[in-house]
Structure formats: structure tokens, C-alpha cells
Length: 157
Ligand SMILES: [Fe+2]
Ligand SMILES: [Fe+2]
Image (cartoon, rainbow, N blue to C red):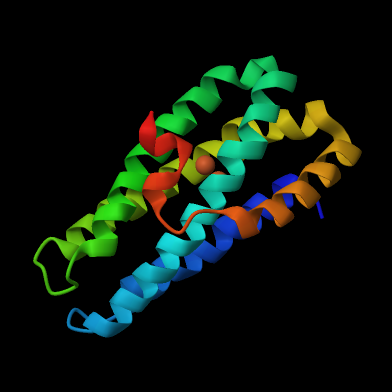
């Protein structure tokens, strides 16, 4: 495993859930709630390993990525607050689909920037061995991820 492959796999998992949500019927409230619960779980764990392991290493070892990391944390901030709202929102609320749509727009934009603009720089600078070590650390760290998105570092910044 390699840290960037691991993070991209997470992105794919989340994108699949987004597609399921988009396909779900307008009135499929239970199904939508289930999908949103999974999205909250996946994205919280993903943000946790990025914020505690991947971003700090990128920032320290690849100085070129500093601005990207800072912008990414701001994007996480918005996303995790939206996740915490979605968690408590009734799927029948008129704002539910709208909030999920904006969340998906935010996440898709964020993922594209990570994958296109700065993960390649990290890959180039760190090399295979370091990326493998990071992957191992991140896989283990997932078990320590909080349940509540507001317990992430980015929520408090
Ligand atoms: Fe991210
Ligand atoms: Fe990511």
C-alpha cells in the first residue's frame, strides 16, 4: 500500500456513496439517511488521517505544498461542519437534499484539488518507501478516528 493510493481509494468509496445518494428516490428517506451515515463515517475517518498524518508530513517535507495544505484544512472545516449538520437533520427536512448537494460539490472540488494539484508533488518528493510507511501509519490510525466530525482538528480552527 502507498499513502496516496490509500487516500484515493477513500475518495472513490465516498464518490460511490454520492452516486448512490443521487440515484436514491426523492422520498427514499431511510435509504438516504443510511447513505449519509456512511458518508459521515467515511469522511470523518478520512479527514482524520489526512489532518493528523498526511497533511503535517506534506507541509513539513514538501514546503511547496504549504498553501495547498492550509487551503485544504479550510475546506475540511466547511465540510465537517456540514457533516455535523447533516447527521442531525431529518431526511424529510426540505433542506436535506440541498445540504447534501452542497456537501458533494465541496467534497468533489476538494478531492480534485488534492488529486490534481498537490498529491503528485508529495508523491514525487517523498518517494515510494516513505509513502508505504505513511500508508501503514494511516491504516492503523483509522481505528482512532473520532465518531463526531466536530472532534476533528479542522472543526476547531
Ligand atoms: Fe482532504
Ligand atoms: Fe482526501
